[in-house]
Length: 442
Ligand code: NDP
Image (cartoon, rainbow, N blue to C red; front, side):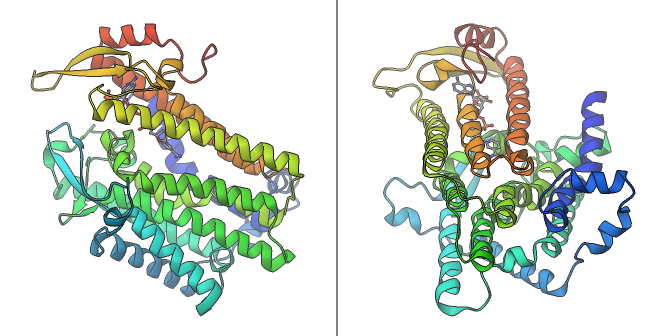
């Protein structure tokens, strides 16, 4: 059942999320990244919507060509190039891996080759920038708005296709969820793991490739633009590139672990993931780099070091917390967390078919400090990216605001699910670990 609040939020997002993305990118293009000036211009009658719209670059053949090539190249790397990295990189888990058991009892196999795709793409990028010169490294920045239209076309096409596929030719009919509400189903998805053929998995591809491989390339293009415009790359731009680069590389190094996260284990594939991965993620997660092209902030050494440390601490907490849970669950508790045998709460739950299962909830390490300390680490890292941009404008701070809303909502959503899954055992767990994100506060 879809309650009215969820429905209202969904309608709001379906109507306004594309406009929000447009507004941010247009503000940089036409107003030097000021979020208030366009509103002031419109409210005072200084400009009309048509003036802003007429100044907006349109879809071009060049952008359509770049985007088609980019997506085709990523599809080829994903589907036709089996992973080689796990054969020579110690500790890296790649190649064919199994996902979690779906509600219908299916265990999907995935070809984990994201790190390889990322490496090949970036080696080619640098080879082009320093040796071949086929295209300018500023190509992404120079076509940023025409590419936005392409990303939207793909985002809407894939979400609509996923909806139709869920109704008429689902990969696994038993893993489909129909609420009867068209908007909810379109947004949150019908199919759990839509696939084409045996290997093309929508969730893994769209989240990782057009979304996360692009993230570091987009940042590199911004750095190249700074170099072109000002003859140098600022330390803030380097910080944003390096800190977000660590986050992206971490994602691909741990792509097999990603199969066990909420995105893959619980969310269905709809507009939220399809359009979000094609448009929201590459356009809004990279706002700091875009801002720094228009405002080349040079941080004093003390601030640069402080932001670097904050970013690294955030990353350390994020990675260690995720690793602790992963290790604990993989070894069924037969491991050491911070040098000691871990403490945990034994719990059980009932599957739809009435079978009883047992599980464990970790209460040691960072999981003893708060129930989602991995989110706290993520938020500290996100704050570091924003701080690198100084305090002149609010636009670069969108990321921390968005991540706080996303992760707090995700935390509540997850806890609601865990509470219905584990019942009384979940209450024992929340009594043992009373805080969600910030020990002593929330
Ligand atoms: P978690 O990795 O925290 O997974 C939550 C699940 O873990 C729960 O549903 C429960 O599943 C299990 N669990 C909860 N508590 C415990 C415990 N104490 N011991 C053992 N298992 C437990 O959440 P996500 O999948 O959302 O996030 C993974 C990472 O991805 C996070 O670090 C997050 O910050 C990051 N992320 C980043 C985003 C971005 O846009 N940058 C977006 C989303 C996430 P079960 O049913 O198995 O018990």
